Image 1 (cartoon, rainbow, N blue to C red):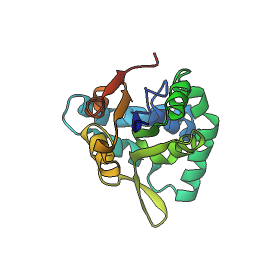
Image 2 (tube, rainbow, N blue to C red; image 1 turned 90 degrees about the vertical axis):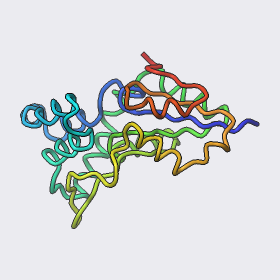
Image 3 (cartoon, helix red, strand yellow; image 1 turned 180 degrees about the vertical axis):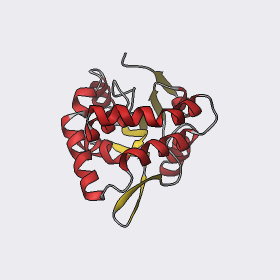
Image 4 (cartoon, one colour; image 1 turned 60 degrees about the vertical axis):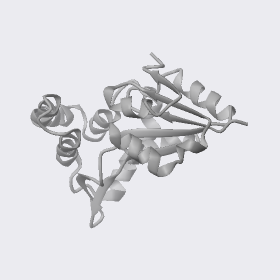
Amino acid sequence: MPQRIAFFDFDGTITTKDTLLEFARYSKGKFRFYLGFLLTSPWMVAYKLKIISNQMAKEQFLRYFFRNYPLPEFMRLCEGFARDVIPGLIRSKAPGEISRLKDAGAQVVIVSASPENWIRPWAESMDVQLLATRLVTKNGRITGAIEGRNCHGQEKVRRIEAAFTLTNFDEIYAYGDTSGDKPMLSLAHRSFYKPFR
């Protein structure tokens, strides 16, 4: 039987919205979310203008919303978000494609720039693997910093190549929806851009 593996971006590919923004809204409520979004918007604009990196912009956002959160409280929020919100964000065709690939014997891996904390419960419910951005904690609290590199762009490729020997696979599939997924898509024998829209 051919050895198969499939890599899926999460935000925008499997989901209809960016889960980092949705998690911040869920955690803080609408008023505090929109206020925080306004206050951090200069960092987002600087990223769009290529003045700062994706990682720097994301860390500023994370620090504003989550710095000094006790880790147990943060994880309770993540589990609640995964249970109550993520199912409503999943694109209708995505679970079927994941199931089809698994039935064909493929390993399925979500590769996401969003933190692993709230994606992992959903990934485990689908029995798929996860490579995602990791957050730094210090003294049992979230710092807002990212451990290593943000799992975006070329870092997705680095994480994949560190975790899997791709030459062992006869068929490689990749699914994404933004320019940040294109390095990952280039690894695949069969790539799919915005496949579930």
